[in-house]
Structures are given as C-alpha cells and as structure tokens.
Image (cartoon, rainbow, N blue to C red; front, side, top):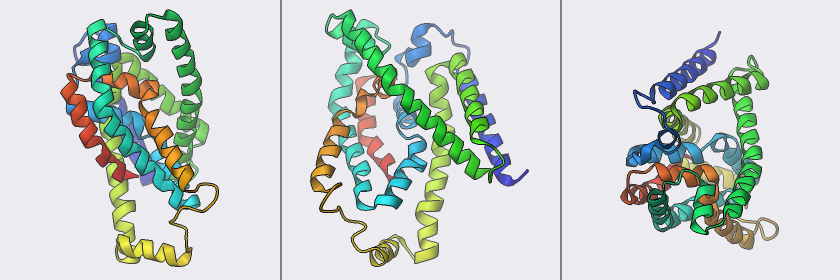
Length: 280
C-alpha cells in the first residue's frame, strides 16, 4: 500500500464520518433533510455552493480544456464571475419566495410561482434529463482521478462504486447537511492541490507564474489567444453569456440557495464566491 492509498482511504473515511455526523441530534424531517431548515449561514452556504459547482471538472475538465485549447479556456473564469454577480440580484428574491411558500425544490418553485403543476412536472423532467449525464460525468471523472492517483491499483468501476456508496450513505442519513460538511474536506483538498500545482510548480520550474506564461507563449505562439475561427471572440462572448445566464438553473445550484438563513447570506456569497475561480 503506497501513500496515495492511505491518503485516499483517510479522505473517504473522513468524508463519510463528517457526512453522517452532520445530522447531529436533529430529526430529519423533509425540511431539514432537503434545505437544512433554511438555517445555513454564509460559511456553510459558501461550502455547499462551492461543493455543488466545483466538481471533478475542476481537476479534469478545466485543466484538460486549458492544456488542449489554450486561450478559449479563459471563458470558464469569465462566466463564473458574471454568474455570481447575477446571483446577487436573482437568488435573494428566489429564496424569499421559497421561504414564504415552504418550497424545497426547483420544480416546486416554478409550479407555485406560475400556478402550473404541469410546469412543475416539465421542470422535473428537464432536471432529470440534465442531471443523469451530469452525474455520469462526475462519477467517470472520479474513477479516472482515483485510478490515476492509485497508479492503476484501484479500477475505475471500484472507485465509482465506493464513491456512490459513501455519498448515498451520508446523504440518506444527513441530507444536505452531509453535503455541506463533506465539502469542507473537498475544499481543503482542492486548496492544497491548487497551491502545489498552481503556485509551487510554476515557481520551481519557471521561476514564477509570469515566466511560465512567457515560456508557453514562446513555445506555442498564439496558444493563449482566441483563434480567428471556431472558438473565436464571438464564440467566447456568446458562450460566456449563455453559460452565465443559465448557471443557477442547474437544479442542485438553484435548490442550494434555499438553505440560506437570509437574503443577506446569499448576497455575501455572491461577493465571495468569485474568489473561488482562482482554483481554476
């Protein structure tokens, strides 16, 4: 057993324990299980939203995009910042309406807001269609990361089943509180990786971040710029706007806003969450 095995085993065990203990002595009625009794402060809303938003894409998708395509990957930084700015104005009214009417899901919101149960059903179906491939991608990413980190000792399928089992256990026991607490482990891990990969390696190999980008520009001229065709400036602008406007329409991000203690909590997070873009 190498150090990677030990680290991953401890991380999984810690996530499971934190997720289960997050319940505390609370009775897990539906309101507690789904939206934590609408009692999360700024820190836990931040952790929950960050946990929902920054997933295996942070390690695989964004880095692979940047490595393969260069400049167009900057759209990831742009749309996140715009989406968080919009959330400052959009999420507080959503939270207020959900609290007034005791709503706990995204379909609930649309069904009640527009007095249309049929619309609620449609939103539910769209959510399912959107989330199934999303979950598949997350689990596949998990399998790839664990397989690589274990030097091939742990197969993709085994990693996926272990991850799915752990998540199922703590979510069944603690609901959304389990997700928020396990995000603590994930955020600490991401921060450690970012400091190592994003700061230490450039300084070790190039003498700093700016010299690293200069070396990239010298090795592949134009790699850090947008191409004239394909993923051009028009693609960049349209993709950023489209992604930013639909950012909080994802059901897990939309419903996570219900857990906030107040509208002010959501506005605080709208100010702070853009800082998380630095991990990309």
